[in-house]
Length: 226
Image (cartoon, rainbow, N blue to C red):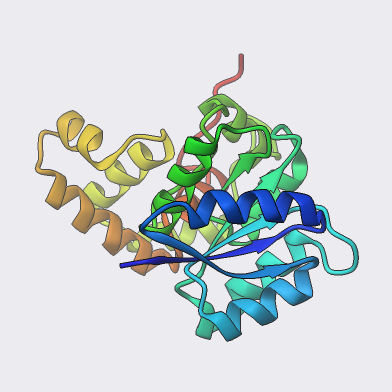
């Protein structure tokens, strides 16, 4: 299956470079280019994109607002957004995850990293950035601080999970793959995938990135204080 990619960036030169890179891959194709968030949302609907590479800072409707619009549209439930940012240590990055993005990627990333990011997002996996540490993500997602009790509403939703689903969610929040979780919990990768899918369904999460957000904001997982 060919991954349909939409490029959203206000810099035409960057879009051209990204297009050449994406179109060079046999399993990908660029289906549209947008210079602002509003155009990105419109093209995502028209072109049925699988993945949107979204610049976070654009004139008019920025990438954050556009991500919220895409995530809130039931017709675009299958669209995955990867935020492109110059500064990976940025409050906007966390807001983009909360808005529904599958992850983020620095604009200075290597070409192979970007192509891998597109494939990961298309598969519904979480892409929290190849160079970002787990502690970084935890620190920003838990903005209420290490002493906080988390969001009561989110914590209440966790009650629908089984004990095993909670265990798997903790591992997902730690950035572990299904194979790694399977080894840690001594179950099969297929069993882990089943638990992940069930947790996503119960919590209304679009993908693994949203599970990570829920795990931290509910207080199920607490950030380590360095």
